[in-house]
Image (cartoon, rainbow, N blue to C red):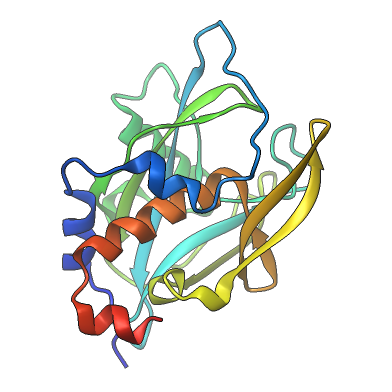
Length: 217
């Protein structure tokens, strides 16, 4: 059974003009965030929001669980991605390269659909730019064992369904924080990854037909 959200919807969502990214991101942002941007310029990084069709023609988005021993964001759910290298021609190129290095999907199999504005990550002091791509065939993942503990995905339709949203209290940097997260495949998807997914979800809400939105409630 084909999914309710298709690639045409995704392209239209990414092409929206005058879209309020800040408001869309607040839906899944920890409250309060409790940080101030540092005076030094942040490093530049990129991630790939990779989509593919499963055997039932439903669009899925790829997520990775980072290895517990990594220096940054260890044990967390993220998109494939990383810091921009000098040889990268663009931040989109960074996202494509990192996708190949982390989960084994080469650049020839990725069609870039668009991107979203950068997001500042206070813990690592990076500006992270999400590119959205589509894998032309059902992907066969080859995870890099030094970086990736698990690769999983979920249907893009489910991103808009309220039953996957949760929240909990955490102590972060000495602050008592309410943290929203997506409950996906037994994992808590929170922080920057959830914020980026939230923007994609709100963009899709702007372009989806009313009948589709009614089915996703």
